[in-house]
View 1 (tube, helix red, strand yellow):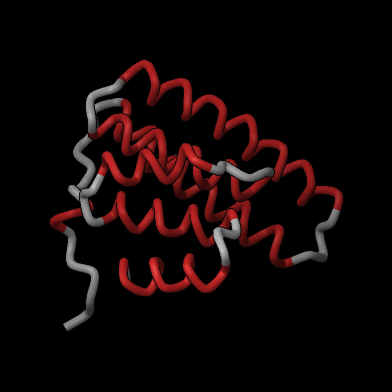
View 2 (view 1 turned 60 degrees about the vertical axis):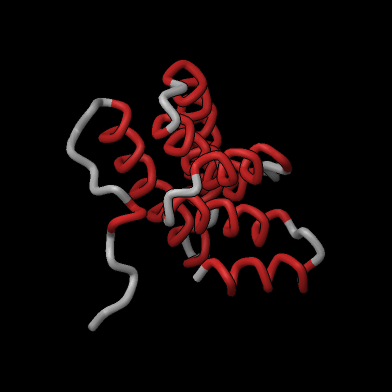
Length: 130
C-alpha cells in the first residue's frame, strides 16, 4: 500500500488528496513522524483537509502530542461538518455521501484514540486477507 501511495504521489505531482493518502498510509504502518510531516505539509480544503486532519490527530496522539492532537481533531471536525453541510445541499451526489461516511468513521477512530480506548495499533493490524 505504501509503495502504491508513494508512486501515485510522484505521478500526480503532489495533488493534495494523493499526498494526504500517502500520509494516511504512513500512519497505518506506524510511521507517525513521517505521517505528521506529510499531513501538515499541504492540508488542502474541505473533505481533503478534514481527512488529513483526522489522520494528523491520530499520528500526533501516537507521538503523545496530546494538545496538538486535540487541536487537529477539533479543526478536522469543523471541516467535516462543512462537508456534511455541502452534502445536505446536494443529496443526489453519492460522492458527497461517501465522503461524509468516511469522515464519520475516521472521527470515531480519532475520538476512541484520544479518549484512551483500546484502538488496534495500525502498524500491527494485518492489511491483507489470507
